[in-house]
Image 1 (cartoon, helix red, strand yellow):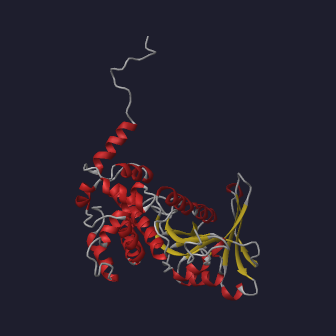
Image 2 (cartoon, rainbow, N blue to C red; image 1 turned 120 degrees about the horizontal axis):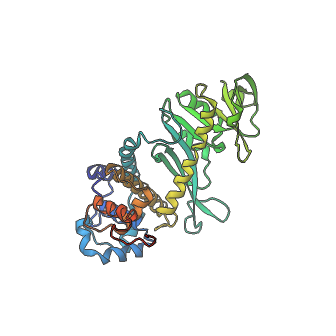
Image 3 (cartoon, rainbow, N blue to C red; image 1 turned 90 degrees about the horizontal axis):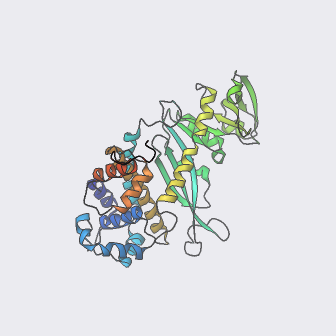
Amino acid sequence: MEFLPHQEFQKCVARYGADRRLRQFSCWDQWLCMAFAQLTHRESLRDIEACLRAVGGKLYHMGIRGQVSRSTLADANERRDWRVYADLAQVLIAAARPLYANEPFGVELDDMVYALDATTIDVCLTLCPWAPFQRSRGAVKLHTLLDLRGSLPAFIDITDGRSNDMEVLDRICFQAGAFYVMDRGYLHFKRLFQLHQTGAFFVTRADRNTQYRRQYSHPVDRETGLRTDHTIRLTGQHTRHTYPESLRCVSYQDLVSLKQFRFLTNNFLLPAHAIADLYRCRWSIELFFKWMKQHLNIKTFYGNSENAVKTQIWIAVSVYALVAIAKKTLSIDASLYTFLQVLGITVFEKSPILQVFPRVASQMSQRHPANQLNLFEL
């Protein structure tokens, strides 16, 4: 928790007056309890209460001043403004991204590269009527713009399951010169042209019904899987007006599955194989969603209101960013999964983190002692 800027946290609290008229159990207490639940994989509010009361003598030194109870934590999740923790997550992400600015991601490119996608988290429609998805199902949709260097989210938006993925393009501030990789769910040429006018680049897949005519053809190396590299112009009844400029269409066939892909981009400078490689790197956001759902508690919620669900998701994101900051700052040579698992069982240890991980690494790489007899020695 020393990597969490407490002054920035208090600014987020003061911005929305979240601690106003509170006698006990402040937003800081709420954050610490919910972060403990994320790090140790607690399943319910009763679980959080029981575990924290079992180590009651250590709570004061951890920073928890209020009395921990299930009803108090439930009321805090229900009533405290979720935007406090959304702003805190943005502060932590802004601190984490420079630490991973030089991380490789699979393509040798100096520009910023982002992957855009959304994932759904199922909820009970009866308990959460504010999150409709299908006739008898409810869901929360997590729209994420992922920085591929370090797999850190640069933008997150939480909506109900029925919201259209393309609408999130209206809420993103695009960065000139950056690349945005997305699937066919975001193929809306009017919005893509607005992205193009900001000076940014996009890479997406062409739809089967996309109508265009070829203007120029460029040579490709077919041994790499590339089939065509065309400069095209849209000819659809509406698309020719919504995107009036030329596009680039790269056709690629996977050499293993023999499946063929058509990529659309507004960048004409990168080699054709780099366009295909950029889209292949989009898989990182799928791995990010899978990691978040497996190793942080965002699939089962401690409350049913919209405020409680968004509070829990944003705290999970901020814990993810905080763990990434600690791992990089301390130069710990372990995966983020290993780092999180070790933290989960040593969360109340009084030894520094750096004293825990060398011990873990030495135990994993420990060999037989030198005085051990060799069974096969002659």
